[in-house]
Length: 247
Image (cartoon, rainbow, N blue to C red; front, side):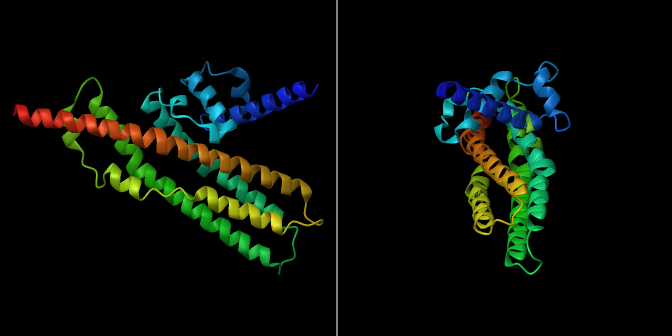
């Protein structure tokens, strides 16, 4: 009986994660997509199932779990995840915080503290995302395009990026998970019997789910995207060197 309950819980958890992942591919109809499957979308189902495994336990992440998938698939997932965060997850948490704070007196110190913390967190994360959208992802896509079907020297020299991958990696600060934990801690400290227990549970679930989502996102960027983009850089450097020697 205990084993059956555990299996049921694991299945429910996997279903929840599965829908959370698919939501970033179709924000308007993730529920329907979950039941219909992936037949109508150009999504690698093996990639989605591997992501579910990573989401269930980020601490057990191994490079080989995702390293075999095309870099273009990884880039698309990151782009869609950025959009999912900005258009759905961050606004949802903001709304839950607003509802949560309605249970406190207007002069309660939590109101100002929590609002300020989340506003700053929201702003910093969006800035981080936009930086990746402006530099990292276009750069990775450009390298892929240059190497498509060999080596396109004309395309390679047609576009110049203002920063290298080393510049970006050295300034790539993944502290957002810690910031979110601080918000969780403050919410817990100020929770009392008068707090709306329903909205409190929803907020806690949202924060915990988003923290895990961010952790997976950072793992994919740090151990899959950036290292594989470095490999492309080295390949292109070798191609350019050979081209220079020939000329």
